[in-house]
Length: 281
Image 1 (tube, rainbow, N blue to C red):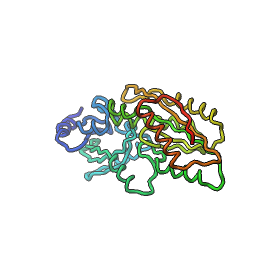
Image 2: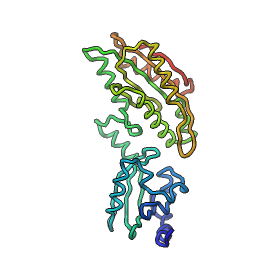
Image 3: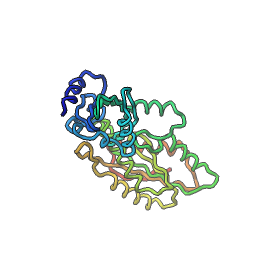
């Protein structure tokens, strides 16, 4: 660590909010708030290029902002790779190749923007359609004059509230995001996948497959997605539950479908999980 870095590192403890000192783009010092905001232990922050902590598509924006930082503060919005956490990095140049970077989580901002924006229909953790959008799509498909075969597969991460209590919300967000990605790669492009509730996903499938075949598909999905997730160099284990339903020409009401899906979610949350069940809609 250079003498210049040491001089500024001593000030980190009294700086409000998360802050790191970077030299040639590499983190050389960080305060406790930076560790808390990123969720990355101090030992893993120091000596790593800040760009390497970001989702690849945001790395160029960070590098450009750092190169263009002058006497005034320059800010850039990015996402942290390990949990897709939205961050704002505010850069202040301290000298040649040396800069102080304030780190602020924008998760709360995103949350309130979603609540305020009537047209925002996607979940902030996974990026998938949210419950409102899923139910709107389900309603449109069931009420369409041209009846197309429709099937539902719901998948829930069992006992997710207990996992949150034991290991924290960041672990939960990582597990939810990873399970969503695993599901997405196993569905066809015409199918709609969304986050139905805190612990669950719902797939709307254009399919006239019999219930027995849907159950086989759901079993495979359950087995494939419920393997441990790596988080901070440790494996987080969990099980999953699935529910399937085939919607024929006799369309159920949205209220009945919703009640059946919520009941399946409650069974998974309270521990009656690691199972496959058929919903009678």
